[in-house]
Each structure stands twice: as C-alpha cells, then as structure tokens.
Image 1 (tube, rainbow, N blue to C red):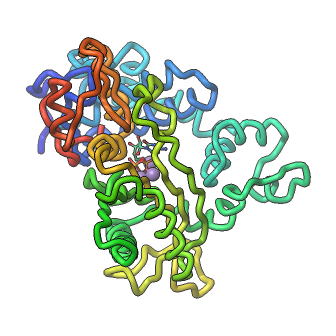
Image 2 (cartoon, rainbow, N blue to C red):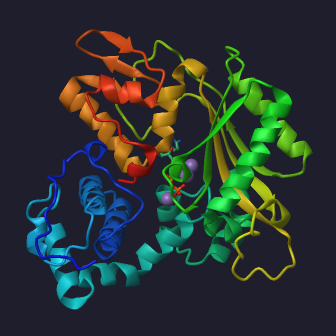
Length: 373
Ligand code: CTP
Ligand code: MN
Ligand code: MN
Ligand code: MN
C-alpha cells in the first residue's frame, strides 16, 4: 500500500509492553541499520548507546507502514537526534555511511564471527581478537586457547547452528520432545515458547517450557528427558543448569541475569524424514548427511511459577525489558521470570496465566504474536 508522508498513527508508548508489534516489519531498512549500530556499541561496552538504538529499532518495528520522511518520526518516542540523522541518511542516500563503516570494520566483523559460535560471548571474542586471532580456524588451532566443552560443541556444529531453524523444524522437535516427555510422565506438559510462540517463521534456536503438576519433580523430569534423548541417539550436546530456585528470593533487579529454574541448553540431531517438507537445506552441506544439528532450550519451572516463566521466555527481549521497567517505574513492582513483588503491599502477587500478570501491572493484554518488539 502507498505510504503517506505523515501516516495517521495511534500514539506509540515508550514502553514496548504497551505497543503491539507483529512479525511484519515495515521499516527494516532503518531497524537493520539500528541493530548494526546497537551491536557495535555492545561490542564496545557502550551500554546506554546500545540500548538507545535497540529501543529506537523496537519502536519502528511497531509502526504499521514504511516511514518515508524523517518528519514522520518526530512524534515517535525513543528516537533521538542520532537515530533520526541515520534515518535521514538512509532516506536520502539509501544507506548510512556510519553503518557501512561499521560493516567494513575488521574488529566488528571478527567479533561478529567469533560470537556466532555457541558458547563464545563478547568478552571471549574480544580476547581472541586482541590476541590476534582472525579466523575460526585460528581459534581452533591456537595452542594457547583452551576451549570449554560448550565451545567445542559450538565449533563442531557451527555450520548447522548458524543456519536458521524453520517453523516446520521447530514443530518436528516439539513432537519429538513431547512424545519423549510423555513416555516419562503422563502428566508432563510441554509448550513452545520464544520466537516461535510469537509467530516467527525462523529462529536461531527452539525454546520450550517443560513442567509437571507433580511438585518438586520438574528437574528430574528434565534430566530423564535428556537421558532419553541420549539413548535415542539424538543428543549432540547438553549444558544443564541445576535449579537454584527459592520461592523467598525477591525478583531480581537485573533482567539480564539468568533465572533460577532448572534448564538445559541442548544441541539435538534432527533427521530430514522427521520434518514435514524436509530439512532446510544446509548451505555447503555436501557430506550426504540426512540430519542437521539444532539448538534447543528447555526450561522447567515448577507449575505454580508457570505463568511467569512462560511470559519471561516468550520474549521478545525488548518486550521483557520494558515489562520489567514498566513494573518498576509505573507500579513499584519487581517482575522477573519467577514472580511479581508488590513493593507497596510488600507481597508476591500470584498468577495462573499471562493475562493475570498483565492485569496486575495494569496493562492491556498483548497476545504473543504481537510481542515482537
Ligand atoms: N531467556 C531468558 N533466560 C535465558 C535465555 C533466554 O529469560 N537464559 C528469554 C529471553 O528473555 C527471551 C526468550 O527467553 O525473551 C527467548 O530467547 P531467545 O531464544 O534468545 O530469543 P528468541 O526471541 O526466541 O529469538 P530467536 O529466534 O533468535 O531464538
Ligand atoms: Mn529462541
Ligand atoms: Mn535472535
Ligand atoms: Mn533460546
């Protein structure tokens, strides 16, 4: 549809959790640029600039039409002088020279490459870069580098894991995990969460919530599940985090910290024959394999924490960040993946569903498909 220069728009909130954001992004030319800038600032540990560009990208993702004049951005929240200048450049010249410079930057390219390995974060990538490493082969062959088991698995399956996961592949994995879980306990509950629950067509991994109404049996269920996957020959890697959940812990202030539920970060083998329409063709794969490796996360909250865990693991990250910020700033409440603390009433607020949590916060309910902030 034809975009008007000043599209009539509902006023957008500066909180992502008060905006509706589908998977359809009409302003990708801007948000892609902002994400490069955000990532570059992240690599330089400039957290506030990084967040500013992430917020700006998130706002533009909720605009229902392509912006064709920078003036149309004037009424939008979270778009400052720097972001608007980048937009202006893109509108005028089709690209931003600041972004193009970053994309050509050696350090940016190397950090991007190194962090694409499962188990390698920005700090390790930076260390490798400063140590003079310039290729993945360098990292594998440098005698001074001791890879941990996660990084070893990351290197071993790098090509497969770098390839996005399709919805059909995610569904196939859901079927396999569901059947396996039910084989262990008839009460097992497994739901798809993360990006695929938000309706995305592709993901970098597949996220699941696993639980059971049998109190205190969640983690053993997860351990049995992983064991069964191993016996089926489809477990390629497992990094298990044991539960440190304590109901008396206050919701954390830092959103980035990992939650306390038992969880496993897995790499699983998925066969072509298990996927409707077959596997995504893995680029450069000519070794005749009939399977690919896929990253899978499984988290197991106790049933009474289920709504909080589901909300926390559905994302997007920006949506989660703003839910917590909104709770803190507007309600004097602390929200995380475990619960909601009301600092006025000095009590935890209970919830059986995501709707209950939105209601506690005084927010209109936003369905998962509209949380792609
Ligand atoms: N999450 C979390 N704790 C972790 C990892 C993830 O709470 N240790 C949450 C994140 O906040 C995110 C959701 O789980 O909202 C899914 O994370 P992730 O798989 O990284 O992102 P997706 O949105 O699923 O996108 P992608 O397609 O890239 O996987
Ligand atoms: Mn995911
Ligand atoms: Mn991602
Ligand atoms: Mn994940």
